[in-house]
Length: 140
Image (tube, rainbow, N blue to C red; front, side):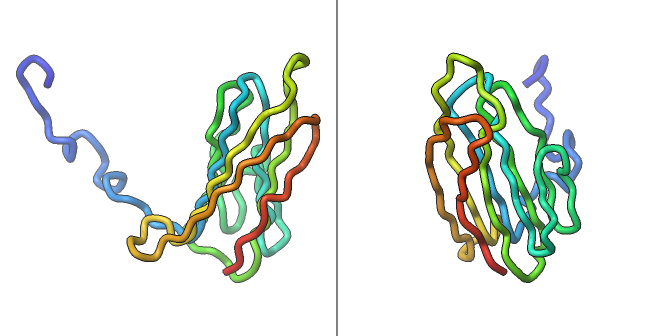
């Protein structure tokens, strides 16, 4: 409420963003250490890599990367190309007094499609700068 006036949400926002956008693939990365740069890397079926400095590809999009805070970083694919999407996480940079960071990756296929969503999560610890963890892959 604002000075006795209560607007309907549907009048405040573009109608296109009020509904869930369904996706073939959604990958989300979070971590537990501030001032740490953790990189989500997706290698698409074409071999093209999607990551923070190359965040738009033929089939996917990577959200903004955070070097402070705890994420999240997300990779989204509306319509997946046939083949394998390889998921990796790299500890790009950490402050000197940090002994590493614990990461959580959530992978969801058929996101926003009730009754069809499948998900898995993986948690792991990265302790060395430039260390890469192979989370796994999803095939379409």
